Image (cartoon, rainbow, N blue to C red; front, side, top):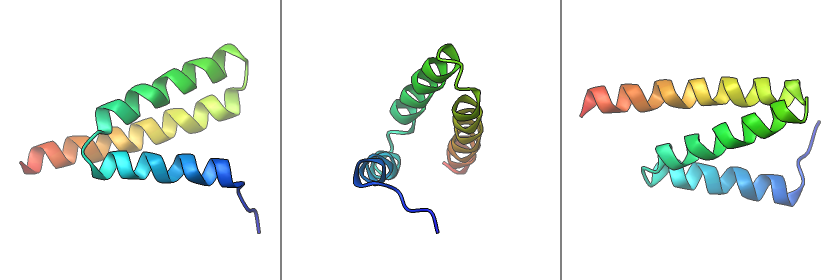
Length: 68
């Protein structure tokens, strides 16, 4: 079983709370910045994971906006 450290867990919780507070755009902006930094550092695995997370969050955001 892979465990995450407290800092990583805390960041994940913060992101979830922002999403639940309706701050998806803020979260997406931060994730895009992190993805660009990972790509610049040639950490393509992390950049790809962030790209996939961004796409999933964007799909959720679009579905929520359609329901309004």
